[in-house]
Amino acid sequence: MGSKKETIDFLLEQLSELEDVRWIKMFGEYGIYCGDKLFALVCDDQFFLKPTEAGKAFLGEVEEGFPYPGAKPWFYIPEDQWDDSEHLVQMVRISLPEIKPVKKKAKKAKD
Image: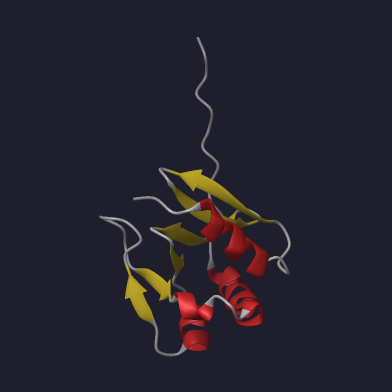
């Protein structure tokens, strides 16, 4: 189905307190990065946070969901929690230290 651009725009506005936050469109869905760390996916207009121990401790009871078929479970953050930007920012800040940077793909040499 794909996520609407309005959804990603709203979430990025809520997360604007974080530095170096950006999105990348992937197959009609979105990955949200802070620097070189992928910390969230927005798929079918649903927000998924990369699972970490610190994030789980902060969130308490957490619902897991699958952002796309074949994906490992991520933390599902219901839409009713999106309006609290302070909570979203805190959740991301607590999670980021445990998230590994995305490795850059080596460019193929041209013959």
